Length: 274
Image 1 (cartoon, helix red, strand yellow):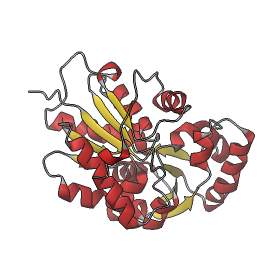
Image 2 (cartoon, helix red, strand yellow; image 1 turned 60 degrees about the vertical axis):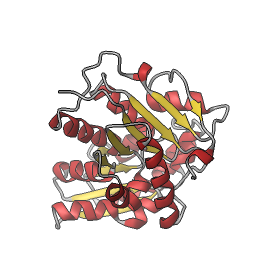
Image 3 (cartoon, rainbow, N blue to C red; image 1 turned 45 degrees about the vertical axis):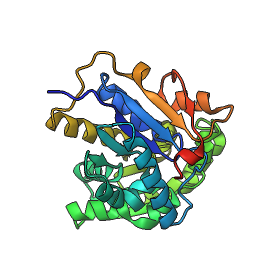
């Protein structure tokens, strides 16, 4: 038994493409429909009510595409609205990026001191701390909002002195606190992996929430016998949809995905905000 329907993935913008990249690597036969709500990006500074509203609109749009799984590839929406979205969509599995990343950190921390970096909304909700402490109440979690990282990545400045200075500003505190794992609690942050690792040193293990969300998706689809056996899946059979398309988007998107995107579809924002 198999299921050749696509996996739906959404984010407020480009960052969720790091999840798509890992999905293609782990399950090369799968098709993906990716939605980036670039017209309203970023979600991180919005109110919880607005984040929930936008997340539900994104989810409903993808549900109309006959998907077999929904991945909320946005740490902000996963932190604020995942439970609400999952309660509204019961037909298919719905997963986010918070719990997979939290589980991975709990399994890998020896000192039981975990750092978290993310958007202001992700840090404010305490979602990662709750998820980890539900597994091991003795774990100490130190969270830091890093609002400069996303615009630096989107400006193509991942390997720049300004970005390295920002990393030092944000992350030296984590070193002083003695964390041995650092969760990259934003799907943009894998683009800064080298800069972040170079700042904190090799003693601190980086936990990529995008990678662990993709692994959870693979585990669930395997358990449900829903992996595709269609040989025509993969990047060329997938769709990439955005609500706004800037002149630099294609190059940025290909950088996030680690591959050239075959085509990008722009839809009116009204298609979501029904």
